[in-house]
View 1 (cartoon, rainbow, N blue to C red):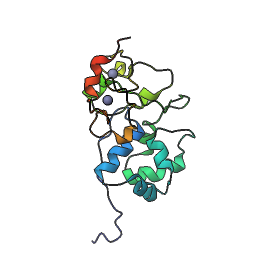
View 2: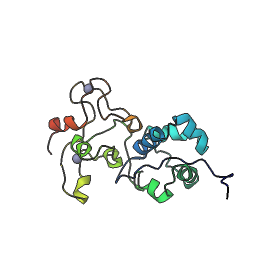
View 3: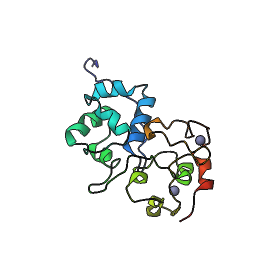
Length: 174
Ligand SMILES: [Zn+2]
Ligand SMILES: [Zn+2]
């Protein structure tokens, strides 16, 4: 049988616990050599993709928006919802926050770092331990704000190149 009508396939990427949608989208695009504009066209979501990459989830993504994205990235809508703030949780899109210690363990942006009123890293409590470290909002060396998670490639400050993992040394214990 010939695969005449086969849809274009993309490389799957590993799903990471608590990963933010912004980080996931950037990772998926780079793995598949797609620009944000191309992903916007493929999903028919237009500017919505760019908003999500910037961690703007207000208005909250709808089922109608998540379904076409789920089809392209081949991840169930339920899994995409786990990359978003839970219902009723307000998030703050700026500043982008970071726990350098979490990042050193596993290099990706967690959605819970953007929860409003959460100023320390507590997410690890559900797994092994908690860091109880104050989340960072800018580079500990040059004070440049962190880029949007979709643009986290090398895991370092875009200005002075200090690795995110190294910044853990300067995080205050709470
Ligand atoms: Zn942490
Ligand atoms: Zn820096």
